[in-house]
Image (cartoon, rainbow, N blue to C red):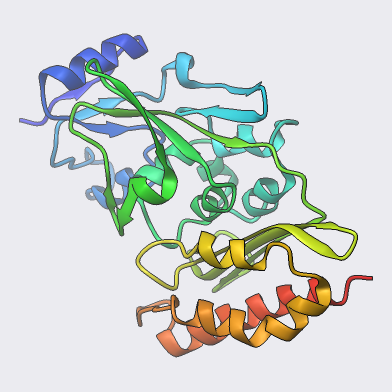
Length: 283
C-alpha cells in the first residue's frame, strides 16, 4: 500500500525522509500526469509520496549579498512577477506552460524532474545556479550541472530534499531566450537557447550560453565561455566559425515525436550564430 505523508513543517519533512523511502511531490505538474489513472480515479503513484506543497517555510524569494535565493515551493508564477528575478528568467516564464501549470509548478520541481527540455532549467544553468540540498545528516551545496546527471537522473540521496536554489546577480548588456516548439508557448521545446553577455567598451568581459533539448543534459561549456572572455568584437568575428564548431561537437540530439535530430542540430547552431552576429554588430 502506497503511503502519502503531508508534513506540517520542513523539519517534519526531513524526519519522514530519514525514516523511510519517499518520493517528494511538490507542485505535481509532472508526477500527476505520469501516474494519472482513468477519469475521476485516484492517481496511481508507485512509491510512497511526501507532499511538501503546503510548506510555507520553503516559499520565498530573498536577496542576500550578491545572491538571489528561491525556496523549493515557490511557484513559477510567483517567480515571474517578483522584482528580484532577472529579466532572462522572466523571458522564459512568460512563454512557459499555461497559467494553471505556472501557479502549481516550481523551479526546484523542474530541476528535480531533470528533463533536458526543461525551459526554466535552461535558465538555471545559464545563471550558474547552485542547489542547497539537506537531510537530518547534513546540508550541502551542489552546482546544477553536477546535480543533474542525465534525463530523469539527479544526485539526491533518499533522505535528502532540495531546499532552495540560488544564483548570483548579474549585469548583462543583453539577454536572449528562444524556445522552438510546436506552438509559441505551452509546448514542450524542440530546441531551447539562452544567452547573455557584458561588454566593456568593445571587449567581452562576461558571456553565458546555454542550449537545451539537444543532448542528455543542458549544454553550457564554461571552458568555451572562458576562452571568449577578453575577445574584442573583431576577435569574436574572426573566431566565430571556431566557436560554432566547438559547440557543434556538444550537440547530440535525438529523434522523437516532437522533432528529428538533424533539424534540432541545425536550429541550435543557427540560434547560436545569430547570437554571436548580434554581439559582433554592436557598435
